Image 1 (cartoon, rainbow, N blue to C red):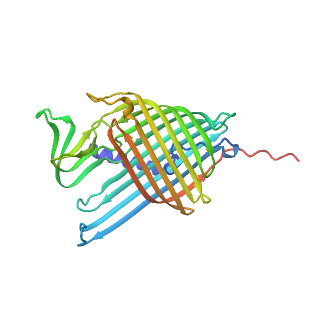
Image 2: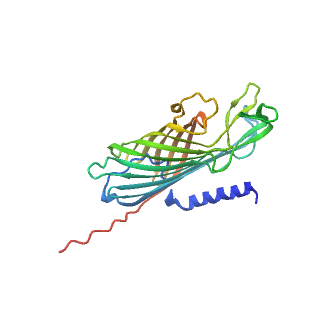
Image 3: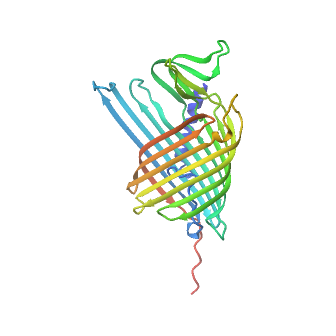
Amino acid sequence: MSCNVRRSVITWLVMGIALGLPASAAALDKEYVAAPAAKSNDDAGWLGSLRVGANLNFMNNRKVVGQLDGNQFTIGFSFDGDLGYRKAEHDWRNGLSLLEGFAYGPPINSFVKNSDTVKFDSAYFYHPDPAPWVGPFVRVGLLTELFEGADYRAAPVDYVVTNETDSTTGLARTFLQKKRFKLSDSFLPTTLKESAGVFLNPYSKETLDVMILAGFGSHQVFAKDQYALSGVSNTGQIEVKRLGNFVQVGFEAGLAFTGAAYAGKLKYKAYGDVLMPFYRNNKEPNEKRKDYEFTNVEMGALLSFKLVDWASVDYILKVLRQPQMINDWQVQNVLLLTFSYSYAQRQIPLPPPAAK
């Protein structure tokens, strides 16, 4: 069995497991920065929810001015859920989210990935009895992609690797006349995150919940031998950058706002995470930038409007910046029709009947 075939089998197997085990999944973009609920025996036990979203667009053009003839498809899929356990001072939360999108149409007439995100988070919050709104936390996370990535062109072009030299010519390594250039393998790049510190939940109401996190964190990025698009040269060549693995350790802070209005029909969230490194490895030769200039930023927002009990229209915004991998802001906007199912399970024994 070839390497590509094995990779495809593993990809679909993992995707099947994720869909078959919704209990291990996280409500749409409900991450570790979500505010822990106040300590209450009424909330104790296992709690969870899941959401599944999809969209499909089709267009056929024939002799339309300014448009290419042919069929155009756009399909998108999201799967999000969360599972947590809360009892007394303890609050443990786990989440898994998938966001996938593909497009098909001229002039390439091939399915092209336009969104691909897999995100897992697990966090533990401790609510001390005297002040449950402040306390320590630890969390871990994973960010990766399911499918391999590639750049497609209608006509053959040259790809130039700006940070790699050809040993024969001494010039930048060049791939000549390609209509498809592979950028990344399945499950790459992958980012692992760990952090610990103190959380502060100064305001917690149904309409607005504010969560602040501060502490120390580390990121391990696995991207060796992968590529990222970096621009177009004056001669029309496509410039790409060869990526590598690296580790960062530094100060971390997070801020999140969540809430609901109109009897839960409208839900909203905005969050941001920042890691300012004081240590990083795998530095590039002649690097003049300071460590703080490699600050990682992750931001996002969710706006969900419930149409009926089981369906909503969701807008998702994701923004990511990892300067040591690529010094550009990565921005993604998604609009989905989402079908949802929620459940709640409490494992608190009922009190014995009062004596008569």
